[in-house]
Amino acid sequence: MFERKVPALRRPLNAIRAKGWWVVRVPVAFFFIIGGILAILPVFGVWMLPIGFLLLAVDITALRGPLADAIVRGRRRIALWRRRR
Image (cartoon, rainbow, N blue to C red; front, side, top):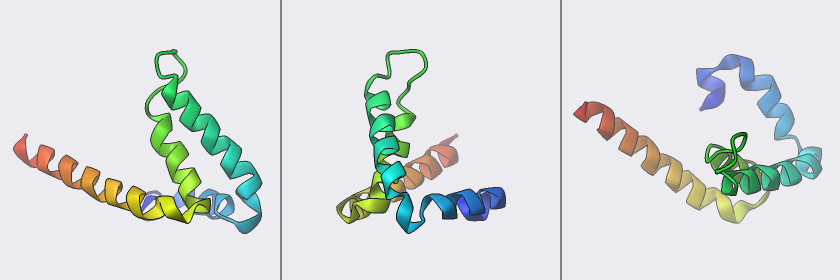
């Protein structure tokens, strides 16, 4: 979805999803998740949680289904909210 909406992200996203990058993805994903949990601090925020889980879902197949379901539900709720406004 991001590649279609922002074509400039195509190359970096393909590089991040490459096979040998799991060594970088997993620690960065855990950093984002921990940063999201520490959302009370000014630099960190809840915005870090979804990014961390998306990065983990690239390598952990068990997260892909639930994460895809959450994305679909979130997009539907946003669409309903926009229609009501």
